[in-house]
Structures are given as structure tokens and as C-alpha cells.
Image 1 (cartoon, rainbow, N blue to C red):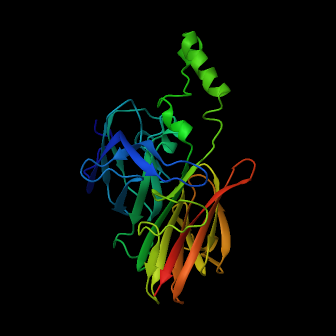
Image 2: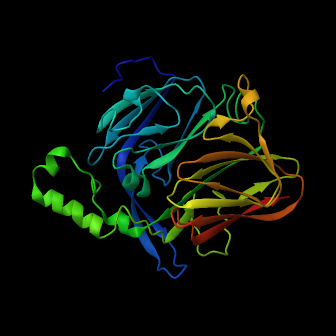
Image 3: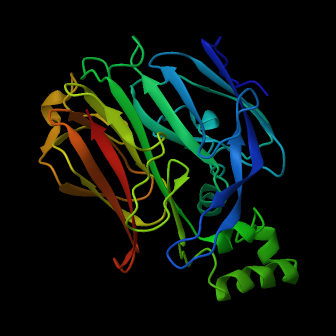
Length: 331
């Protein structure tokens, strides 16, 4: 189970694939309260969480992730980190597994994600993902080598759920060549999913930020996992991820600077001449599609409670679905 290009690791991390977890979602937006079944990538040495527990390492470290499975075959894809193909966890180009040791060595500090890449649309929806943070060699407190320092760090992982998808078999909608030419029952079941509009019809009803649900379109999330508290003069780094299937439009109530996009720092040598950080005025907006990541930096210059907003739109029709709010409090 060791990688064929084995190098002695600096860091060893353990994960278990496809571990069940129910989360309580409150009533709101005309929907009842429910316990939604998820499957997560569990840390057997920590707590079972959604999103799956953050993996955090430093740039240049050789990282081994020891993976075991609990049901079915899965993968872990290291989105944006680009390890060797056999360690990249894309089932179509490597393999699906129940046990393996992934090996990677991040070459750049930034915000990344890890997720199952088997039946990706379904497995991502049911919770098999987490943040992968790469710090510069000196550790947390600086966004990347030569980049800005920060005092307060926040994670806004924005997601939404269509409960119908969570009742499907983990291989739903997958087709093997021998199935198409063989068992008519398998073929019929695939047509049944298509006709019922399952994986090609996403209808989100519940909305969360970093696993914390919002109750309606107007009540800010105050949970400290999402809401930000800072002191005047501090620098706030917010790592924002679209972890859903809607178009997400963010409105930030304070002046902010985009310092990285999709794990790529802006303005960092030696390629700084090709990009630079982007400054935005308070209440400016930007849009992120699935798996996009922006790192934004806010300098706390004014005291008060400021409400940030993320609006969800249908990715095809661009019609409004819902919005979520949270606060940035500066004292």
C-alpha cells in the first residue's frame, strides 16, 4: 500500500473513507427540520466533523496520508496540489481504493481542498471533502512566502444540500462498459435515475457555511466557526471556498484585498509581474463557482458589526435561490 515513489515523510496523517455522520438542519425557508445523512472523510485520531477535518502542513514537507476504507471504494483527490498521477486520487486516471498511502509535497502555500473523486458529483454533495491548508515554511501567520501577515484567520466553506441526493447508493449513475452490454437491470436503474431527474437536477433546500446551517435569508450566522471577531488594527485572512453546486455571489462589507486565487498567490515573485493583489471597496461583490477559492485580506480600521452576505443562484438559470449572512465584528 506504500506509494511506488516512496520518500521518507516529514508528516504522517490518517484518514478513513466514507464514514457516516448525521447533521441536524433546522427548519427554515419553508422546510422542516431534518437530520441529514452524510458520509465524511474521517480523522480516526480526532473528531468526526463536517466538513472533514482540516489537513494543515507546511510548504516543502513530504506528506503521507494513510487511508483506510469503511464501505465501498473511493479516492482522495488533492484539488490543486498536483502530486504525481498515482497519488492524485482521480479514479479514471489512477485507481479507486479501500486502503493506500498517498504521498505529496506541496510546492506552494495556499488554500486547497481534498475530496473523493469517485462518482464525484454525488460524493462531494454527501460530504466527502475538507480543507487542505499549506502554510509557508515558517508556519501560520503569513499567507505565503513573502506575502502578507495576518492576525485572525477564518474559513468560509459555503455549501448547500439537496436531500434527495443523500438517499442514493454511492455508485448511483455510474456506468461500466460491461454493464451497458450486459445486465438489463443495471441499465434500467440508470435510466430510472435519469428520468427521475436525480444527479442532473440539483434543488438545494438547506444552506451552510463551514458546516453551520443558516435558518433563513435574514438571520446572520453567529457561530464562532463562521462569524469573525477582531480588534482594531488587526489583519483578517478569510479563506473562502465554494463547496457547493450553486453560483455563489459574495458581498464583503469592508474594504478588502484578494491576495490569492485557487491556491495561487497574486504578485508573489518570480511571477509577480504577471499578477498582483486586487483591491476592492466595501460592499463590493464577486462570484465563485464550484471548487473556486479566494483568499481575502481585511485590515480592521473601523469598529462595528459588519454583515457579510453570500447569495446562491441556480448555476444554469441564474435565478436566485437563497442567501446566508454572517458578521464581522471589530472592537
